[in-house]
Length: 118
Image (cartoon, rainbow, N blue to C red; front, side):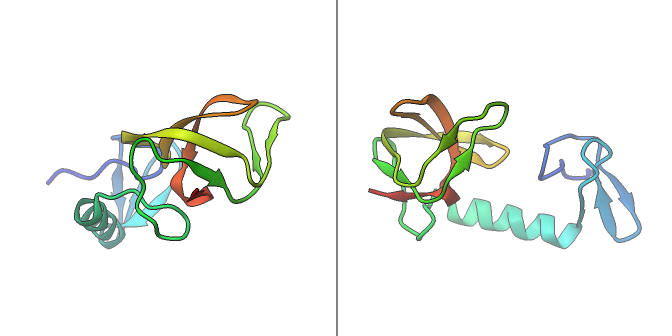
């Protein structure tokens, strides 16, 4: 039986500890049932949705719905910042499933949970 990769960091060093699956790279712990449910939902849905449930497509315009701190800098993306002509990523990294260009900030990857369709 092959163990699933870590849902948090995608490392393939997962091991079992009793009823839990554990990732030694990021110390994330989860149950096999959670992993199976997440996989089923991802395969079943396959549609990227914004924070309010609207389906997103390549080329849509979105608006940021909360202030976002940019990791590694002192920049803050304010509420209401618009991104035009988004591109949905086939293989999301760390939950970032939208690639876009924000005015005044440049190229960014965003999570669909922090945007709404404009």
